[in-house]
Amino acid sequence: MGISEQVERPKVAAALGERVRTARRELGLSQAQLAGQELTKGFISQLESGIVRPSIRSLQVIASRLGKPLDYFIADEPLAAGKRLAFHRLAAETAAERRDWAEVRRNVGIALEHSPEARERAHLLHLQAITESADHSFERTFALVSEAMSLVDPATEPNLVGGLLYLRGTAYGELGQLVAAVEALEAARDMLEKYEVVEPRLRSRVSVALGTAYRRLNRTTKAITAYETGLAVASRASELTTAARGLMGIAATHYDSGELDAAIGSYRRALDLFQRVADIDFELNALQSIATVQFDTGDMAAAKASAERAMSRALEVGNAHWAAVAEVILARVALKDGRADEALRMAKHAEQILHESADAIQRADALGAAGAAYEALGKTSEADKAYRRSLDLYTSVGDFADRSGMAAEYAHLLRARGEVDAAFEMLELARGTAAR
Figure 1: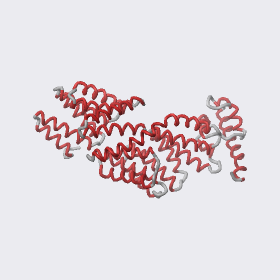
Figure 2: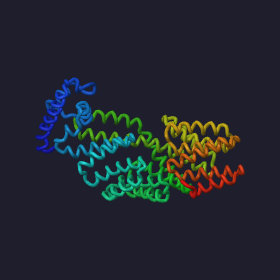
Figure 3: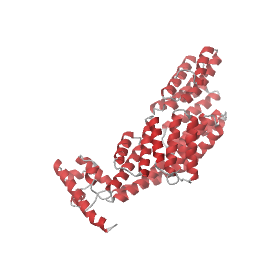
């Protein structure tokens, strides 16, 4: 620490303390009332006297209780602009993990007001693009990704550029532009390999997304390879749960230490570890995707084993959503084995869970499985209803690639019944020539 900073710190602490005291008195609060249960009266007294400097977390509690923005208290702190920028970026990243898109936008907006340098701006634009993608504003997503990529050199920021390419690829995938999706995702994969980026979270995401794009293009061998790569990476990350919890406790201790720099550093470490732990979702995604490809290639025994493994893992970690996705595959396998009643039971149960979790695409798949089971049981009216609901769901979310596959399956069923005109209608839908 330089001499000038040593001189400035007491002045900053005194100015901060005076602002807290003034705001507290304006509201007629005692020091004990301001402290509440989270802090202590003694801490507030020392803070107002300029003896201690609060952590960001403690200052957030105080600011909230006093009805003031955080900047009201730290605006005059030396180097505060850079620290506030770091704080709001971290807050945005954490909000993104919670899928709290309004909070991401708010913190990114505040950070951008501090005129960040190019690299930092690119990171903020990346967060903004993630939010736009979540809202299905894909044109805006592409624009933000392009701007962010223009601000950084891949050689110095391969992780960020890889993340941007991944986002571009998944956006293309959502739009059904699968060739463009594969191109972007392969570029992301190659970027991570070229610069030897050791980032299991991003690597697993790229591999799973690439596997899905390959599968939808019927590139089965490549799909399996990509899924297995993503699964291997994500599985290693899932072993970090215990360590992540311990590190979060350490991070909380640093937050209360009164040192802003240490607080931000600990926050980064804790956030990074929790992000890696979150890759269990991608492990489950990879497992069920492998099972799907095995089913599509006719390897029922392997598909059943993979789906059972996915369901067991999902139930182990309390993830009902992915357990239901695996159950749909098991329903399809049961139907192939001639167990139509069991297949219908599983498909209907899975559809209910997926409806509750608001996953329209996987729910549509479950309805298709139910339709096939109804047909096998001779309940053609119920089968028609299930298939039509499935197709409507795919249409509602713009997933025309998967809708095409379901329409082809339904067309085959209708042809077997002898309903030629209805079968032709479905074939037209499968080819993409019917009205969307």
